[in-house]
Amino acid sequence: MKRFTKTLLGATLAVSMLAGCTGDTGATTTGGSTGGSTTSTTTSTTTDSGSSTTTSNEGAGKKVGVSMPTKDLQRWNQDGANMESELKAAGYEVDLQYAANDVQQQLSQIENMIAGGCDVVVIAAIEGSSLGEALDMAKASNIPVIAYDRLLMNSDAVSYYATFDNYKVGTVQGTYVKDTLDLDNAAGPFNIEFTAGDPGDNNAGYFFNGAYDVLKPYIDQGKLNVVSGQKSFDEVATPTWATDKAQSRAENILSSYYADGTNVDVWLCSNDSTALGVENALAANYNGTYPIITGQDCDIENTKNMIAGKQSMSVFKDTRTLASQVVKMTGQILSGTTVDVNDTSTYNNGVITVPSFLCEPVFADADNYKAILIDSGYYTEDQLK
Ligand code: BGC
Image (cartoon, rainbow, N blue to C red; front, side, top):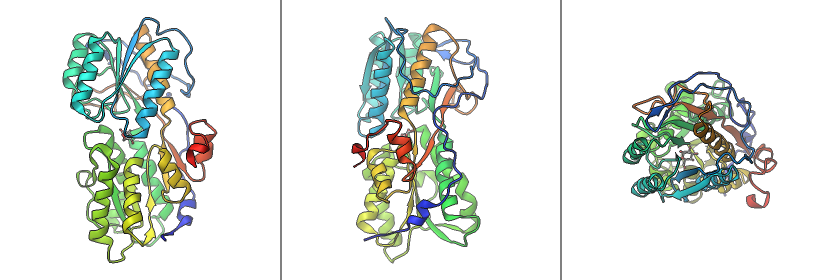
C-alpha cells in the first residue's frame, strides 16, 4: 500500500478560481483575416460567461465544419458534442469529423468540408504545422478558419483563435507545487519529475513553460532536484499525449532512478492523459511516499483519482465555455460584426499573430470538484463513482 501525504493536498492555495472566459482587456485588432480577405475587427468587451446555448436562428442556411483530432481522449468528445449541439441550436448545419490522431485523415476531412460548402471551418489540429494544404484551400475559397484550442501554425489563413490561457494553465500547476511544498520556506530538497505533452501541439510548450518558469528558481537553488536529469521540453514530451507512452517513460524513470528507495515528491504532468500514465506506472512500480501529481482537463478517470487521493489537482477548462465562445465568433464572422477577441499579441503562428480569445482556466482539486464539476452540471455524481 502506498503512503499518501494527504496534508499536502490540503494545503492552502493562492490560485485564481475565476470561472468562464475573460473578455475585458479591451485590446483592438484590425488583423482578422478571413480566408484571405482582411476584415476590420475591433475588440469588444464581453461579460458573457459563455455557457448558455444560443437559441437564435442566425445560422440558417449556413454550414460549419468542425474538425476534431481524436475520440481517444475524453475532452475532444465533449468539445465536438458541445460544438455540434450549440451550432445546431443556432440553426447551422454541422459537419463534425474526428481524425483518429491521423494527420492525413484530418487533412482530407478538412478538404472535404471546404469542397462540401462549409461557410466556416473550426479546427482543433492534431499537428498545428501539418495542415497547410487544407488551409491554403480555405484561403483560396475565402472560407474563414477558426483555430480551436490549438493554434494552427505557419499560415496566414487562420482568421481567429479561441482557447484557454495556455501559459496560465502551466503557472497554475507550478504554483500549486510551489505552495503545497512551501518552497520559499521549506528546506527541501524535494525530488521532482516532469511529463509534458505532444511536441506537435503548440499548447504543450506553453503548459510546460508556464509550470517550469514558476519552478525554475527552486531547481536552480537545488531545492527541487530533477533526479532523472530530464528537464528540457524535448526530453519530457509525450507524443500524441498518449497515456501508454507517458506510462512507459515513467516506468523507465522509476526503474532507473527510484528503484533504490529514493522518493519522488512531485510529478509535474501537463495534463490528465499523461498524469494517468504516471499514476499507472507508480501503482505498479513504486513503493515510496506518493508524490504530488498535477493534471489538466478534469477527465472522469482523473477526477476519480483526485477523489481517491491518487492525483493532487487538475486544471478545469470548461469545454462548454469554449464551444459557446467559438459559436459566438462564428456568428460574428458570418454576420460581419465585431468579433470578440481579448488577446492580440501572444499567439504568433510563425506567419501572423492570430487575434485570439482566451478563456480562463480554473484550479480544481478534491476539495472543490463538487462545486466546479457537479453543481455546474458538467458531470453527474454517478459518473464519478
Ligand atoms: C489541450 C489539453 C489536452 C491535450 C491533450 C491540448 O491541446 O489543450 O486540454 O489535455 O491537448 O488532448
